[in-house]
Length: 527
Image (tube, rainbow, N blue to C red; front, side, top):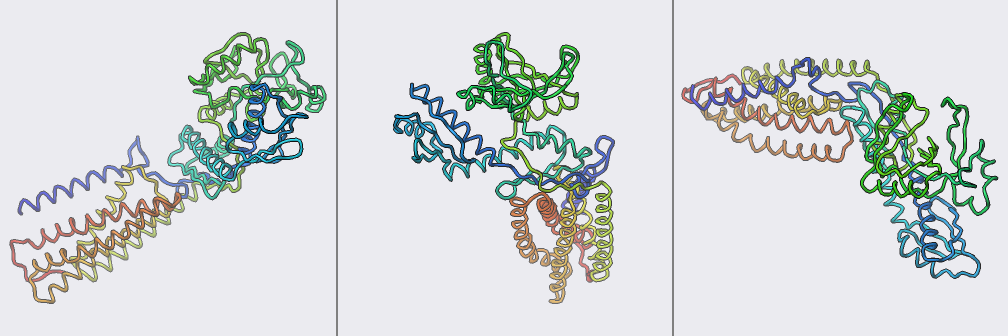
């Protein structure tokens, strides 16, 4: 046996060993190949991002900014009123012209179109700005959901936007779908806002919203929001609902949060301690130092979680207290760390795939593969005899390489992926068939066995590379633009095609070289 064949044998044995080790289950890794939602079980969600909330928030912030800029320029602040999710009207004081307010709008509100109305101006979000805001809202929601899911330790989640305002979420192996869904849907818009007072030390609060609204002076009603919170007794037990009048201005929000974690409170209750970013700490320090002895409302999703009194300046860290269980505190800390959603989510579709269905799918897919492989083995050996056995050996190595590569790259196996494996094996056999038929043609022309083998592989090479290349290009497009199951199909197809070329031209050729040695002159070939 010459040296050229020896190193080929060593290489093939090494390849078999490397990829076989990857697919053998161990105590540390009992499932070397990850399974997708359709095989492992889990939840499938389709959620709509309520993008109108983001545009409404943009309008509210624009109203506040217009009033603030007017006051800073010693111009009478207009009365603002939101008339839709994308527009607001600014009513000007009597006898005041519109020029100064238009200048403020053009300078500080460039995303709004300005139109004149009776006694004021109308500000409307520009179509391009609205579309950009909606796209950004969906993208931010996808990233926030992804961070939350990653923090839960879910492997191989699929989180992709669909259409203008939908997100498809697939979470394999989730054993508590209700909790995961709650964590995903929690908006977690954290805000720090000052509670308005009617006198020093006497905040505006009431047991119901209407009573609180009637209590407010007319000039203050447009400056505050009435938000609910929990009312507790002296022992910290929730006994009802309390409404607070809090300023609309939000000087510090969840965007200024750097970290959040669960700790024990003064009496052992779970609380959430937080730290602020380098940009947020000075803002929080300014907010607390200028409002000492006033209540600071900690607002989460438009609900007052707690409203502690400010005793001194607070710069970098603080605590959120509330009637939390340990699990609620942990989940809230998680969503605060991962960032708030830019808008709330509405569940449009929810499916739970049970593990039993996944096991049935695996069993059926496995049986289909075994039956197909058995029929293929009988057909190929019956038609091509000894060369057919060569093809089957190469085919088995192709399967080992494919599964081993999936294990090493932590690819997810799905039902479409199993279909891709079966298709790949079919194409691998097709490559051998092309080579064998070319060898038969060379033999019919009267060439020797060795010459027929050499010419068969050489002339079939271009055809096989051409067919594989076009399929690889199609698989790349499927991987780039497809969703989860389509990507699973594309991954197995790409790996299988690469393995097919290796086994068809390297392994099969080496087997022919061993059986039909170049140094010997054979008269017959089993093909």
